[in-house]
Amino acid sequence: SYELTQPSSVSVSPGQTARITCSGHVLAKKYARWFQQRPGQAPVMLIYKDSEGPSGIPARFSGSSSGTTVTLTISGAQVEDEADYYCYCAADKNHFFGGGTRLTVL
Amino acid sequence: EVQLVESGGGLVQPGGSLKLSCAASGFTFSDSAMHWVRQAPGRGLEWVSRITAKADNYATSYSASVKGRFVISRDDSKTTVYLQMHSLNVEDTAVYYCRRTVSDYPFDHWGQGTLVTVSS
Image 1 (cartoon, rainbow over the protein chains, first blue to last red):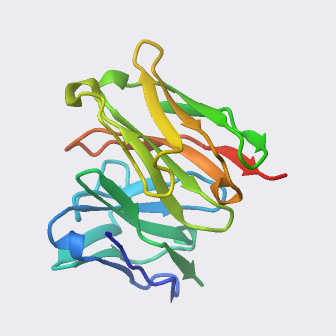
Image 2 (cartoon, rainbow over the protein chains, first blue to last red):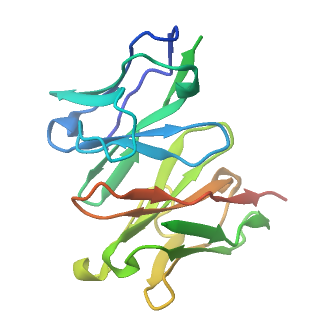
């Protein structure tokens, strides 16, 4: 079965760069998406096709890919970026999310 | 403006059934794939099911945890997607989100979710 592995937590100070990784064999063949979920809210897509940013998403959010790992980078993290972040991938009929990463900015 | 509004959640006993609905507006429903994604209390996101657009023959797929118990369907004339859930157990307790995607396009919209609680 497919699995996507994320660190459970990442912590940075305001203004620093936060990097969240997502690893899985399927990522070598399929694109990933990244979602942000603030407490009590629905997820919001930040990145699609590994590194593309949809309109309306702040430019400090970027994505990259290398082999079986994709990375979400938040350049100059802000307090408002404190949230849970999930990677996601779809392969044929299989769809799956990573376990999620809690980002703390303080 | 894209809107996805879920309904039908509530309290159900183990072994029971429930049908969720998601009313969509603000986009061309028939061109969109529709998903259900759930989130158990304090846990991460879990993809549940998807039904493709008409152009892809309304193909359905399910996660292993719900296959054989849940059925996804859609009514393009009502711009609504459904999730019929049978043989519910306590592990199915979660907020269920409706989600819209379009192949090869950066459209990925979610509703606010409806809570399903399975408990005796």
